[in-house]
Image (tube, rainbow, N blue to C red; front, side, top):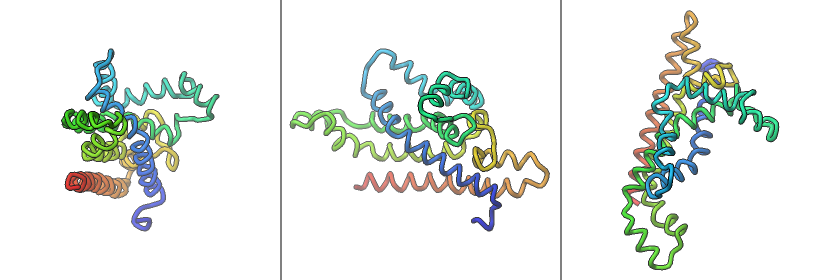
Length: 228
């Protein structure tokens, strides 16, 4: 692949895979918690939480990126705290691309997991509880295995979405080759220069291949989990 792709193209692909993987892994526990909360718990502000989680789906991605810049940028309240206390800078860094990708992919992850949780018969969990199992043990031994296909599907969908994220990412972290230039940003950059169509097409083919591979892997893993 390194011979087929130029150094700049290869860096964009590698960075996209890194960003998508880290964003998915970091989002998983929060996505599972949000899915369980929305599916099973009743609490004040549940509708507001549901709206906030799904807001990135309806907001223009550029707006989401701008809001991230306001909050986590060098002059933003969260950005200043992270920089001064923890020494973490997100704006115009690959870590900021992770945050942007995670936020844009989070609704898809939560929705897939929530549907899986809602499909579990609560009577199965109640039966395990009557046998003396704690709530955590019931979740780990009964609920989690039953929702595993949904969890896998949510993770794969989030990964694919994170791989293709463009608007929020380029607004929040710009398009710096070798630092913040992800695969979609590189495609955009190549299309802006004469003679860049060939490089853009190579990246498009890789994007399609990775996304299709992720979807096929999701289907395979979900079916294997169901058979088990």
